[in-house]
Image 1 (cartoon, rainbow, N blue to C red):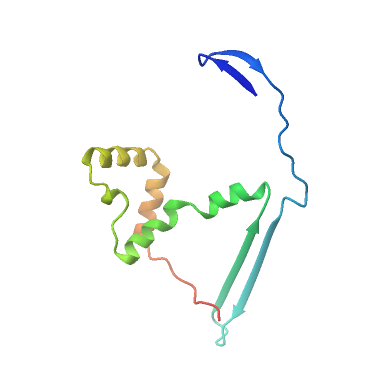
Image 2: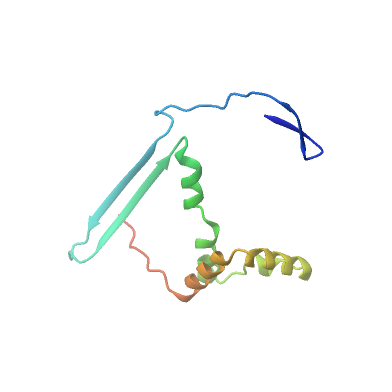
Length: 124
């Protein structure tokens, strides 16, 4: 660990031990159930994933990507977006500007708004 003075000069360094993990701590587990419909033309898929150790942070980030689902929910439930709920005009413009700084999110959002997402039937 480094100690920095006035944001530019290193004044001290200290060795620290980072926590380690074993193969038993790092687990990626996936269970997939596939059910063929009685008409043999449809399938229902149910998947359960669990992660621990070093797999967990990156997988959580991928699974909990905010912008992939929230706008679909706004549309489905006919609710206001978070940005629409900001009453202060300057703050709303600031937040919109910050959001627009991520162009890949904006294009992904346009893609989601343009299409209907098919839903799989629930497995019984």
